[in-house]
Image (cartoon, rainbow, N blue to C red; front, side):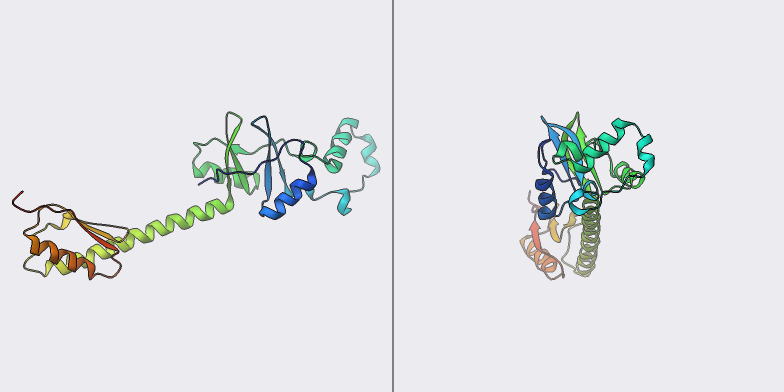
Length: 217
C-alpha cells in the first residue's frame, strides 16, 4: 500500500526549494536523506513560524532563564535556511513488513498524517492517509467484484439447470472478474457451443473460456 517512489531532499537543500517542492507536488512533508540514510523530515509544520511571514513568537522575559543552548537551537530552527536546520530528527517510521494495524496505530498515537517505511536506515517508501483511503477503495472494489462474480455464476447455473442437454457439473464452472471458464468433461461439441452461448447471455460476463475435454479423451 505504500508509495515507493518518494521525492527526497538533501541536508543542504534550501527552505525555499523545499517550500516550492511541497506546493508544486501537493506534499505535506519531504524526507531528508544523507548518504542514503534518512536523517530527518521537513513538513509544513516546520514553516508555521518563520521570520519571512512575521509569525515568530516574541520571547518573554522568562526566556533569559532558559539554557543558552536551547535558545540557540530554537533560533536555528526558526531562522535556518537549509533542511539540516529546520528538519525534525524525530522520525516516525515502520519496517517494510509492518501490517496496516501497526501503521494506523502509529498515526493515531502520534497524530501524524504520514509514516516513513525504513529498513536498516534506508528509505523504502512512505504511507500517507491517502494511501489508506486508496487501499480501502481497492478492497471494496475487490469485494464488489467477488459479489458480482457470484451473482453471474448463480444466474448461469440456474439457466443450465433448466437445460436437458447439460452434462457438465456445477463445480466445474468458475467465474473470475466476469470471465466464465468451463472445466471438466463435456458431452459433445454441441454442448460446448451451447455452454458458451448460455454464458454470453448472462449480464456482466466479459468473456468465456472453454477448457473442457470431450468424453472420448
